[in-house]
Image 1 (spheres, rainbow, N blue to C red):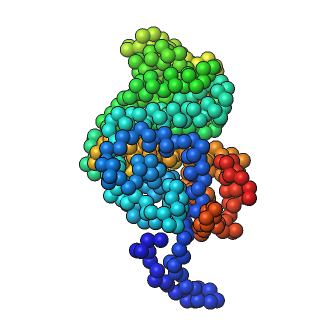
Image 2: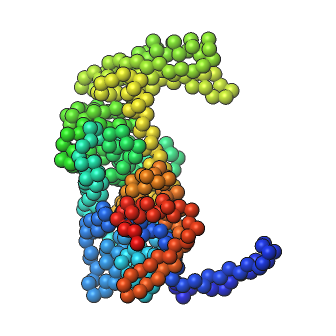
Image 3: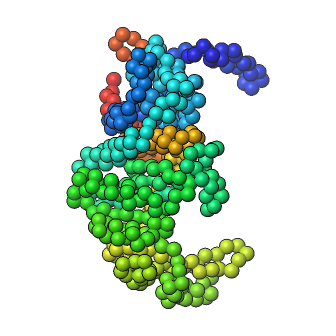
Length: 458
């Protein structure tokens, strides 16, 4: 532990049958003893090594103490373990578990990079390096799932979803957005779903200015992604699923030129509402007679003024009630080129994109991907990509936990159950031993996951 660690104790009297004394005096211990699983997942993917290789080291060689790989790994592992701020480095630089994660002797190894060193590191990446980082991140995810599935995937669904990232000051390219009533960024997150698997795998997260339109960067992102997917999965049908902000002639033309299946929500207008009327009236009648809201589904052919041709539009007719208000019509529309019954396309294909919202919540609540408080835009994009890398490792861990009670656990739960374990670390000439508590509630799950990531029984 560092010299600034608290060693003064406290005494609790009257809480139990005997007085209780608490002392911070245990050397060679860590509260993140289970995080070795994280490193095992990283080694299997080779993720941080590939990403760090995209960065150019412009430091004077004689003054370098920590490699770019060490700096990158410390930030990624720290984010995964819940230490989202660079300031946390001051408290972790002597932690034996984090020294172990960075291939140092956990007891006698040199201290980890400090907060100022990590701050300078975050300011080093330029636009070309960030672009290469984004490419490598997507390539690693695609290759991982090509190996996992053997390339035998019938269809791959691409979800692109914008989200809001409130600014924490005067960050470069953060602008006031009237929709969110705040200065913010508007990042675009991208996910892949293979066949009907329950997990959506993050492949990219692009930070965009606060005044960006929903569609900004969508086509450019897809032009880089689609050739990679087709090379890895040549027999798979590619499908894209988007919210209403993406509806537009240029995107539909692009999807059709690229032979993509698409299902895209569309905002209502007077013509579509007129087409939906024949489905809305039976819904109103049923509510009036039975005091019950139902849904009716239908379809029509529709061509907006800017569209090159007519397209199929699925109609969902329903109503919505709020306490103290009269029921009102609630017609929804999706544009698609996929064959199938309207109800199936809406409920089973389009509505499944709601799971993406859970992944974004994990990124924000579990990993603080919106902690973009650097003044420089490129530094914030680097933070976002490092957080995305941490999430990919957590998704890999969840994949390895598929036969345990952690199979569908959220990031915060995975961290609490598997990483936050008090450990006493012992070093000898031959090996390093992590002494974990026998009373750890999820010891069996931890053991099974360790086996899944390559550990062998002793």
